[in-house]
Image (tube, helix red, strand yellow):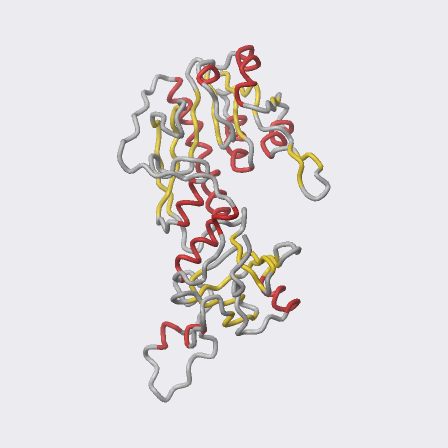
Length: 340
């Protein structure tokens, strides 16, 4: 089959590779977003899908807008198109070009989490399970009829970046099989009308940390915003970002804080030497700063983070932050009310 692939970020690359490797698929072109300026130098950088396509010797189209690809797509005369995180709305005129339409790989179990940020919203909501859905594109926001759905568990402590990497790899063969099925005559199933939730794009203003919330809520927020845009608070008036977080002493915490045995200790026993839950402070208060990370008090419980970013610095391991900045237990994050 003749196929044109639409995609832009790194999570679309495994699917492109799967189509390139498929013996029954001829990837005649790849459509991706234009190169964009990055970094302080504002040097244009190619999208990951473009790099993968060039390496595979595939023609690349980079229209400014989805409709601008209409003429090239008509000349290519594809049997079908595949889409993974392309990043632009495609109008009906474009959707009608391929003989069998467009098949999209979406990183949720539709109709839950329709929109641009399904994984971020699933983690922030505390979902235990997400998944993959392949569906035929229509003009709505992830509303087209479904070809396949696959459940994927969300691991405790997992960030958006971690989960997206797993979903991208797991979804690649699912998308290839769904395209084959559609071309062979499979009839997609309409999505149910109940259970719809929306997952709009995440803005940095959406991920400011409120340490007055319970530790589980703060942890979910931090993990949902990692690696981009990064959940933020303030330290001494400057923005400070956290890139991972688990509930201190919880099941996802890799550090044994002694919580499991604390209830069994007799009144005369000494408390565990490294148990941040023994004396929680005010929300945002730094309780522990050591090689195991930073433990910060929340409205109830505390979180442990091991990857942080001080203002003007790169992301670093918390142990490097501790060694370099020597923060004092008792100081408070976000105590100044934070920055916008």
